[in-house]
Image (tube, rainbow, N blue to C red; front, side, top):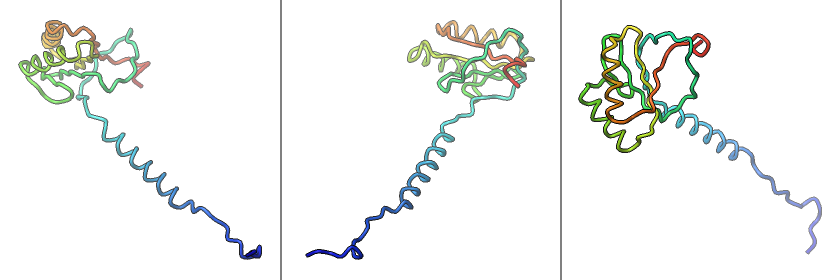
Length: 139
């Protein structure tokens, strides 16, 4: 049976479901990337440096902090010296080459900084950097 050209049904593809899927994927990826970021920073006035190097951000970096009152922070959470030693022991067992960043306030008592650096050295954690302020990099 021969069909007339007027009766020929054209197959059309609707773009609406495809566009809906693309928008849903976009929203999913935006939400998951925002949930990944943890707040590791503490409020400190960084010491000024004229010879600092700019380092690329690293999400796997371990962040230790000391505020102007000498309080210790591990990944942005308050901690004690005893707990700090325990956590550093765990880090030295599992990831001895992990990058560590020390954030200190410019008014931090120096003996607290030495205490943390000694704890890192005791646990043989040597990939340590001290965060400073530099006008060129911290605008």
